[in-house]
Length: 230
Image 1 (cartoon, rainbow, N blue to C red):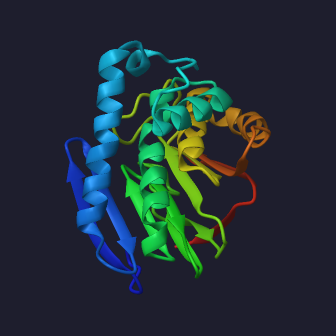
Image 2: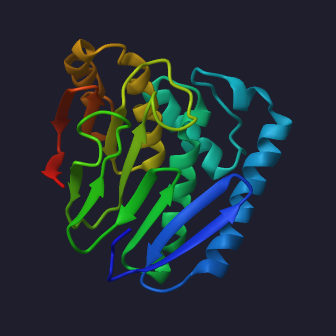
């Protein structure tokens, strides 16, 4: 939230509450895009109620909206239900949409981030009552491709988790995939000793670049992820 080289604006439509940073204020066009995305999601869920409730991967019709397919594909890799990818998928769709209007941008949706940057930035990690909370950040280096940074927690927020991790942060080139995998790995962390095996499992999943797991006073990381003290 301290990106002084970018303009910050917020967009809220129903439950969707986005903080966006870009090179100019794109509120109007992004709000219209968000309304359209929500319409697609709501109409699809209305016609397919099971889509919202299922906790395992499913298949959908070929003619389903693009965002639905993105959620389903990510959920299949992660081994979870498609709704586990919804916040990341919305952030990813918005990021792709504004790319022609801004060479750099940061989309934050409920703590899940999709960003493209031309300079090094740091994503701060909030991990509830863990002593690591707000004292660690993930360095994001300039890349041609955007990157998704999504975090799942059993102790922070309202997201459903069957584990006990304070924070499971996942990096990939897709925010939808990062979101789904963060949920999946978070479900697996029941105690601090689970961290090493969950890291080893997660980094082998298709498209995953790096993972950070925090639980109580224990922490582990793997892959292309660089941490820094705050």
